[in-house]
Amino acid sequence: MDHLSPTMKPSPNMLLHFDAEEFIAIAVRMAEILNEETELLTQMNVRGMAELHQEKLKLTQMLESYQSLLRARPDIIEEVPAETRERLVSVVTGFGKIMEHNFRHVAAARSVNQTVVKAITDSIAEQQHLTVYTKNGGQFRAGAEMSGVSINLNQQA
Image (tube, rainbow, N blue to C red; front, side, top):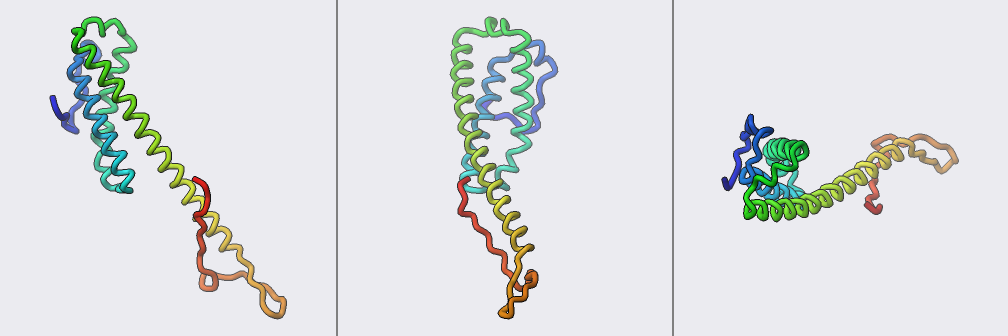
């Protein structure tokens, strides 16, 4: 199975039977999605990332089903042929590295996004409280027409 359909659902007997080949295919496809998501994030292509969301959710559910099965019956791995078990270990190891790489990129993007939003809200709050002094020493609050919004993003993310 080279590619899983986004509509594929966990098989009803998944909790009774461990299909190592299916698990490998799911993990490989999820790794592809995470790599693609990381690339789209680098390109700031949020729409492209959104298009991956449904398939990513379904694959996550399937991986969680297998994880539950393995937690409940760790001995089930012994039933998998040695060659397939080696591939399984290799795929899971590679998947873990890809997942960590993706997580770091998503966390960095989230941090930058939060910093930008905070800078914008702080700037707007500051502009709303801007007091302007007249040449006679009087003061008044500048409205939006008097004060342009100035945003300083020169902060460490």
